[in-house]
Image (tube, rainbow, N blue to C red; front, side, top):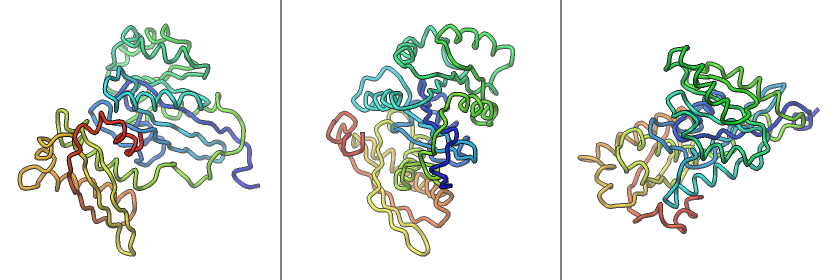
Length: 297
């Protein structure tokens, strides 16, 4: 029987929650490879990123979404819209917080989002490796009053603790039907998209204040040769004052961004990478609806 015709547990799961609670780390851990960038800074993820977990008995399609937050700028409003739009076409919602996040009384916007859906919702409480076990029960008790969750699971996405339990709970809720994607496809995003995100991740890691949030990365060319992949990319900023920060003294910051991004790219692509970076200013691009559309928002 064709693998796409065989009926197994198959479904789409949205990973949602506040910014910086570990959704991208969880996606990468479950897939066993890095397709979604991570950073200690909030609101790193800007787009919906799909990861596909394939097994003989199931196919779980995970959607990593931007953090749900009170958005003010056009860019942030688009990010929240992307997250909320994902909830309409999924089978299960995984609502993720972490143990350092404020208790439910501070999550009124999340309650409103959850109460509007008719999908089953699992609560994940991440970063349990950072607190004592006796502090976990009051957190679970507080969140149980927020919403009638199908399950409440403490996990550590970074250390993969609790991930098997999550898969088991998801399989209880997913329908039996043919696979939605071929068994050898781990994601629907392109290599061009992933390498642009790797550059943006290094900017988040290495620069400070408003600079990472004012940055977009455009892949100008992506050419494969027999010896290497040659990538030309432009780092787009909003103000001229940010250009010096990205380039750094004698070009050292830009060189470091490129060096660290190239290392991850070579691991992703399995070949040598020649990465060329340019920097340009597009004034207030994150507030310009036309520019946002050109960037895929």
